[in-house]
Amino acid sequence: MQASKTEAIDESETLASVVAAPTKEGGFDVGVAVLKPAPPNYEEDDEDDVAPRRELHVYAFEDDQFLTTADALLVREGPSVVVHDQSDQPLEQLVSKHKTRRETADLEGRGWPKVKAKLEATVCDKLSFLCGETRGADACLRDARACRAAAHCLERAGLGEERADDAGRLRLAPGVLATHMRLDSAAAEAATILPVSGGSKSAGPSPPSSLLEVLGGPCKTPAGGRLVERWLRQPSLDKAELETRYDVVELLRDDTSAREAIQRALGGTGARVPDLAKLSAKLRTGSASLLDLHKLHVVAGRVLPEVAEAVDLASSSEVNAEGAAALRTETQPRLAKAARDLRVFCDMADATLDLDFLPDVLLKASVDEALVDHAASMRTARNAVDDAHEAINDAFANANLGNGKSFSPGAERSKWPVKVDRDKDRGHIFRSIKMYDEKQLAGVTVAGARGGSESIEVISYLKAGVFFTTPSLDRACASYKNSEKAYKAAQKALTAELVKTAATYAPVFCRAAAALAR
Image (cartoon, rainbow, N blue to C red; front, side, top):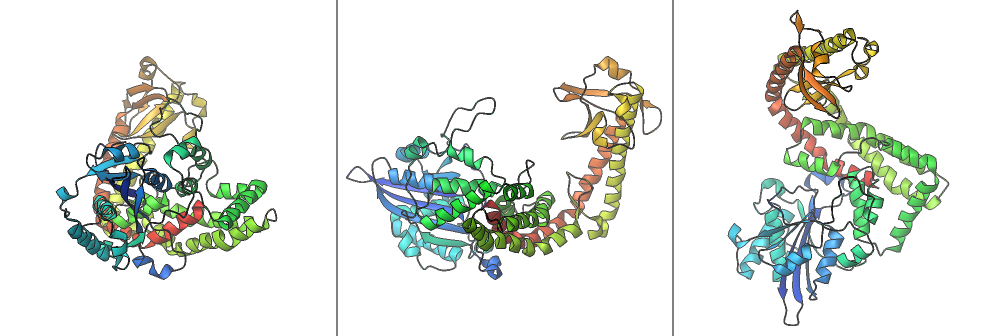
């Protein structure tokens, strides 16, 4: 599909560029560049802060009139975005076969040289800065189309500006086409490996129509879903690798207790593990929020240790000795090491993150004296919201609405008949699951926070219930919003420093994501 506007691409995504020139024989000379996340390095932890974060693979090859090899390469890599030169109909047809965003770009219009020799020199200079060396660059970029494709990738990813933070963060590699079984889009579609590009969207849930949906859909982690997709897009030719993979699958299929222990550790049927690769990319760019740090803290402090323990149990299974050995020698040590490496991160999060206002995450007032008064104001406003919530439930009970007998000030608020929900505009609103008309609600007398009685203002009637508010709730929400705004303004600089410190753990979270994916 043609992208309507340029969307940001983070380090967790794969970007591709294709440049093709027709030959006299009716085929094409093709250059392809693929920019993707670098695989985690489990051996050289001490160099995490200077290790390459992305890889640029550059390909040059002769293709047929249908661009079959280029098609198979896009199937293999599965890029989220494909960039090509403007007004290139064969490439438009090629990319339309794939479920990806298609973008066109004018390199010369963005300041890149038009002459081949100058373009090659410019690309080599930029890659020397990004890769920290020039070795291999000349060989990869000798082909004019490959060089242009590499320039497209650098330009689209914003790597042509030579920012200090990008120095040494890229690894350049000549592309190799023969490492996996070759599948073009027609073969992938015929074998129903991938969802059909541009398929019709039904109103409700539809049954899976591809192997990716069947095998990748149940994955508990986004990284696991991507790993399954990569295995399907890039069928391995390594017999030993495949046999190890099958042994582990057989172990988890036949050992129910081991399988269920891992499933429970990953969240059972609840929410999946967040996308650690994307959160790590946000850490590195300084755009992570305190809520993002909280999500990472949950993974580091709870999910990783529990999964490591469950995998350790599975590694002692007698169902499949080879599968148990693979878990024992590869997966479990990586999980356990990631959990150990993130203990200091967890200590930092425990000491700085205030979870009393979830789903809002703030810095603890103890971090800085300037936050103390703002925190007190927020808690006062939050208590006022709770008081208004109790008052409306008490009023419903007195009016014999909402099964009033179920209301008890000492009971769990989640069991009260009138709920309090978050609202984007108002902050909080009340919701009654049981529908009442305005005449019934008009008969409810609510004790106001300032004494006297208050009336109910109905906001809307929806399938989820009737939504309404009271003056006390409105005042409490306004006070909370003002206090929260002041608090967030006061903690802005401190948050930036905390995120900067947390960013040093981004490589560890990337390794953790890869280990959890398996």
